[in-house]
Image (cartoon, rainbow, N blue to C red; front, side, top):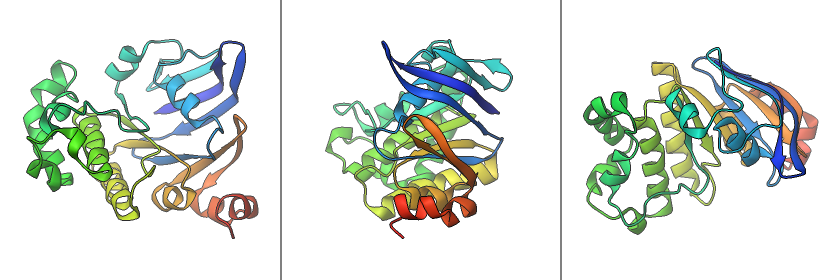
Length: 235
């Protein structure tokens, strides 16, 4: 589904990513792991068209996206839950969810997908008329994830979903992702600092250090890796 090869990107004359290569298959959850400042967010911005690649390829279902704009990438089925959620805080929960239906197809299926969203996160139905900015951090993250899923993604990118949230809320969100990957064939790119949570959810993972892929493997292989245990898991 997603094939990233030799990706280099940065800001102005400063390069952040160096020869990044990885793949995400159909119905697979792949974790991109690393500490703050490793280059994870730059990678996400490049894949989603917010930032233009200096070199390399981003192929999605056979289509080259590396130098396409963000709307083109979105229309082809890559939907991101951004770090920090980025909700419209003065709008209601329902109005924020409506923003997930961004084209003709998603608008046509909005009602059924809204009911699915309420099934994933029942609390959102209770707060449908409440301003999003008055919700707790966990509830706001639920809105952000539900809004993305209403967009009917083929590939869902979760950028730091655990940031600032209680562990049980993070588990609920990752459980939804796992269920949709298993039942609906949704592919998920999970970008995380919390390696323990990420590897518990993902099928495979890649560790980024200083803008380069330092390690890759199955979740079990990375959990057993001595460098990962010492540098990230504190074992």
